[in-house]
Structures are given as C-alpha cells and as structure tokens.
Amino acid sequence: MAAVYYNRMMKVITVKRIVRAVGRKSARKITFNSIRRDYFANETKWQFAIEAFLFGIIVIISTWPIFTVADALNQFLQRS
Image 1 (cartoon, rainbow, N blue to C red):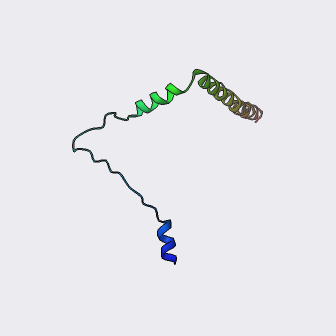
Image 2 (image 1 turned 90 degrees about the vertical axis):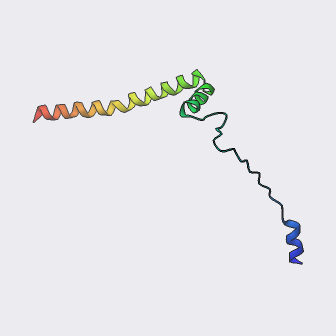
C-alpha cells in the first residue's frame, strides 16, 4: 500500500544540458565595467544626490568629535 502511494507522489525531474563547442566563446563577455555600466544606468541622478548628501552629513557629524578631542588635548598640553 505504501509503495502505491509513493509512486503516485513521485515526480519526474528533467535536466537540460547545454554543450558548447570547444574554443567557442559566449556572445557577451561579462566584465566588471559592463556590470558597473548596467548598475549605474539604472540608478537615477536623484538617488545618487541623496546618497551623497547623506554621506556628507555622516562625515560632518563624525569629524566633530575628532576636533573636540584635538582641542581638549591641546588645552591639556598647554596647562602641563
């Protein structure tokens, strides 16, 4: 009984295999530049501007503690 149920549940899987001739190259060579070109062709200028603006804000915010530490170190060295 279990074998009959199992045979009804089995499915056939077919695999297609593409064989290329030796020495034959693909029609389109995938390079880093082609990937980059495709990516930036789909990205709009507004997206880039927003990301650059947010990156600038992060850089400005992260430089403030560095200048504060440099000023505190300068004051410490002048007093000692």
